[in-house]
Length: 84
Image 1 (cartoon, rainbow, N blue to C red):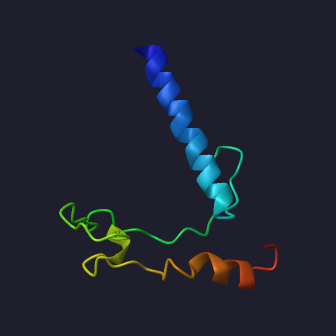
Image 2: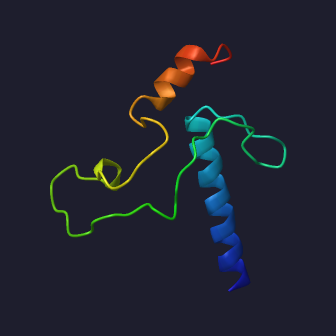
Image 3: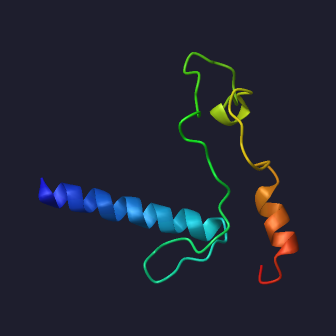
């Protein structure tokens, strides 16, 4: 069981690092994001599992409010941050 738990923790960490790299975020030596991620209100985030439309996502649900326009967030970062 300990080996399984360790494998899962490593897999989650590797996936997290891959996602941070894809979003072009800087990660410090401790594996933490330096800055740049928009906040997510996890407590208010909801999904509608009964929605059957092709292409539907909880990201499109009007009940979910996000601090940034996710469709354009990364493009704007790349355009305005000199290092990117």
